[in-house]
Image 1 (cartoon, helix red, strand yellow):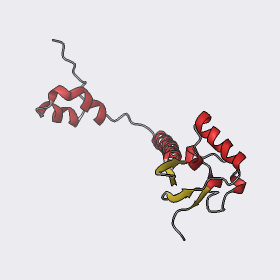
Image 2 (tube, rainbow, N blue to C red):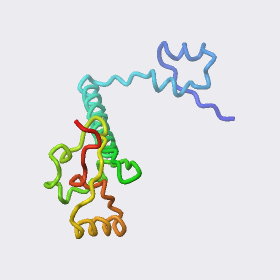
Image 3 (cartoon, rainbow, N blue to C red):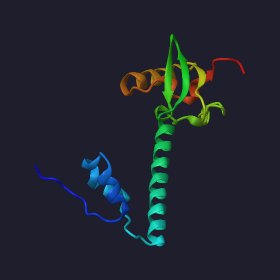
Amino acid sequence: MVSISAPTCGWHSTIITNNSFSQYRPCVWLSYNDFRKKKSDFVKDIVTSMLVQLLFLMVSTYGVYQIKPVWIAYNVDRFELILSTDLVNINIHNADKSFKSPSYFSPQYVGVEFSKDNEERNNNMFDEVLQGISIAQRPERDIYLFSK
């Protein structure tokens, strides 16, 4: 059996030797070793670490924003959970102004109103069957489920 031993240098090697955890000697030596870095190197390392963490925070916040539910839409006989990535903003200018921008904090309860125009109703039906776009994903078809 080959044993790996860390170089002995300073007071921490005597603490490790006298300790019962001598099998962890190389790992502990690396964590307690003082490489005598300059202060500018230390500041550079801290700033780099903070920038990387800030980048990961921004990416994860964007991911949470993308996956959050925007509406709970009552469509005929069921409720559909509509995510912000599922919205179809083709005719957003025809929507009520409260449905043009999604809520940031909690999903809104909305109802779905079918079009009174037969041609538009047929287009919506074909979009749902052929492309998988539900009528609840269209903000221009939403109405208030509860009165405000």
